[in-house]
Amino acid sequence: MSSNLAEDENVMMCCAACGVAEVDDTKLKKCNGCYLVKYCGVKCQRNHRPQHKRECKKRAAELRDEILFKQPESSHLGDCPICCLPLPIDNDKFIMMSCCCKKI
Image (cartoon, rainbow, N blue to C red):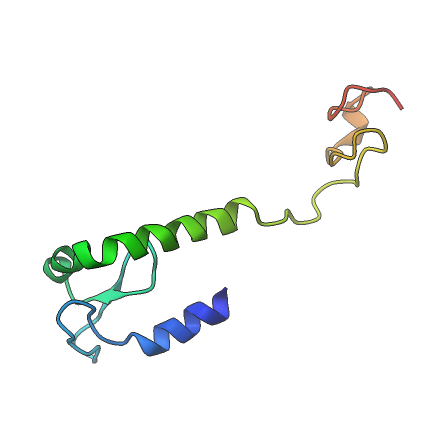
Protein backbone atom coordinates (compact mmCIF):
# COMPACT_ATOMS: atom_id res chain seq x y z
CA MET A 1 0.00 0.00 0.00
CA SER A 2 2.65 2.53 0.95
CA SER A 3 4.52 2.02 -2.32
CA ASN A 4 1.30 2.70 -4.25
CA LEU A 5 0.72 5.91 -2.30
CA ALA A 6 4.29 7.01 -2.96
CA GLU A 7 3.77 6.40 -6.68
CA ASP A 8 0.46 8.31 -6.59
CA GLU A 9 2.15 11.25 -4.86
CA ASN A 10 4.72 11.45 -7.65
CA VAL A 11 2.08 11.28 -10.38
CA MET A 12 -0.42 13.79 -8.96
CA MET A 13 1.58 17.00 -8.52
CA CYS A 14 -1.12 19.41 -9.64
CA CYS A 15 -4.54 20.50 -8.46
CA ALA A 16 -7.20 17.98 -9.55
CA ALA A 17 -9.70 20.76 -10.29
CA CYS A 18 -7.78 23.59 -11.94
CA GLY A 19 -4.46 21.97 -12.84
CA VAL A 20 -2.21 24.42 -10.97
CA ALA A 21 1.17 22.77 -10.46
CA GLU A 22 2.71 22.42 -7.01
CA VAL A 23 5.66 24.78 -6.69
CA ASP A 24 7.44 26.42 -3.77
CA ASP A 25 4.82 29.12 -3.26
CA THR A 26 1.80 26.87 -3.94
CA LYS A 27 1.36 23.94 -1.57
CA LEU A 28 -1.31 21.43 -2.52
CA LYS A 29 -3.37 19.67 0.12
CA LYS A 30 -4.45 16.03 -0.17
CA CYS A 31 -8.06 14.93 -0.10
CA ASN A 32 -8.89 13.93 3.48
CA GLY A 33 -10.95 10.94 2.36
CA CYS A 34 -8.78 9.04 -0.12
CA TYR A 35 -5.40 10.81 0.01
CA LEU A 36 -5.04 10.31 -3.75
CA VAL A 37 -5.83 13.70 -5.25
CA LYS A 38 -4.56 17.16 -4.31
CA TYR A 39 -6.18 20.57 -4.36
CA CYS A 40 -4.79 24.11 -4.26
CA GLY A 41 -7.66 25.31 -2.08
CA VAL A 42 -11.09 24.70 -0.63
CA LYS A 43 -12.81 26.31 -3.64
CA CYS A 44 -11.21 23.84 -6.06
CA GLN A 45 -11.99 20.94 -3.73
CA ARG A 46 -15.69 21.92 -3.60
CA ASN A 47 -15.87 22.40 -7.38
CA HIS A 48 -14.27 19.00 -8.05
CA ARG A 49 -16.29 17.10 -5.43
CA PRO A 50 -19.10 15.87 -7.74
CA GLN A 51 -16.59 14.20 -10.10
CA HIS A 52 -14.43 12.85 -7.28
CA LYS A 53 -17.08 11.76 -4.76
CA ARG A 54 -17.68 8.18 -5.96
CA GLU A 55 -14.00 7.24 -6.32
CA CYS A 56 -13.16 8.95 -3.03
CA LYS A 57 -15.76 6.97 -1.08
CA LYS A 58 -14.56 3.72 -2.67
CA ARG A 59 -10.91 4.41 -1.78
CA ALA A 60 -11.82 5.57 1.75
CA ALA A 61 -13.71 2.30 2.31
CA GLU A 62 -10.68 0.33 1.08
CA LEU A 63 -8.45 2.21 3.52
CA ARG A 64 -10.86 1.56 6.43
CA ASP A 65 -11.07 -2.15 5.56
CA GLU A 66 -7.31 -2.38 5.32
CA ILE A 67 -6.93 -0.92 8.80
CA LEU A 68 -9.81 -2.96 10.22
CA PHE A 69 -8.67 -6.31 8.88
CA LYS A 70 -4.93 -5.83 9.37
CA GLN A 71 -3.41 -8.71 11.31
CA PRO A 72 -2.58 -7.76 14.89
CA GLU A 73 1.01 -7.60 15.98
CA SER A 74 2.33 -10.32 18.27
CA SER A 75 0.91 -8.82 21.44
CA HIS A 76 -0.53 -11.97 22.96
CA LEU A 77 0.82 -15.17 24.49
CA GLY A 78 -0.44 -17.51 21.80
CA ASP A 79 -3.77 -19.14 21.19
CA CYS A 80 -6.05 -21.04 23.52
CA PRO A 81 -5.80 -24.79 22.81
CA ILE A 82 -9.57 -25.12 23.24
CA CYS A 83 -11.11 -22.26 21.27
CA CYS A 84 -8.04 -21.03 19.29
CA LEU A 85 -8.62 -17.39 20.30
CA PRO A 86 -5.62 -15.25 21.31
CA LEU A 87 -4.75 -15.46 25.01
CA PRO A 88 -4.47 -12.22 27.00
CA ILE A 89 -1.09 -10.68 27.74
CA ASP A 90 -1.45 -10.84 31.53
CA ASN A 91 -2.12 -14.55 31.99
CA ASP A 92 -1.29 -14.51 35.74
CA LYS A 93 -4.42 -12.54 36.61
CA PHE A 94 -6.83 -15.12 35.19
CA ILE A 95 -7.80 -18.50 36.66
CA MET A 96 -10.02 -19.31 33.70
CA MET A 97 -9.29 -18.57 30.08
CA SER A 98 -10.89 -15.23 29.32
CA CYS A 99 -11.47 -16.21 25.73
CA CYS A 100 -13.68 -19.28 26.25
CA CYS A 101 -14.08 -19.44 30.08
CA LYS A 102 -12.59 -22.94 30.19
CA LYS A 103 -10.09 -23.94 32.83
CA ILE A 104 -6.99 -25.65 31.46
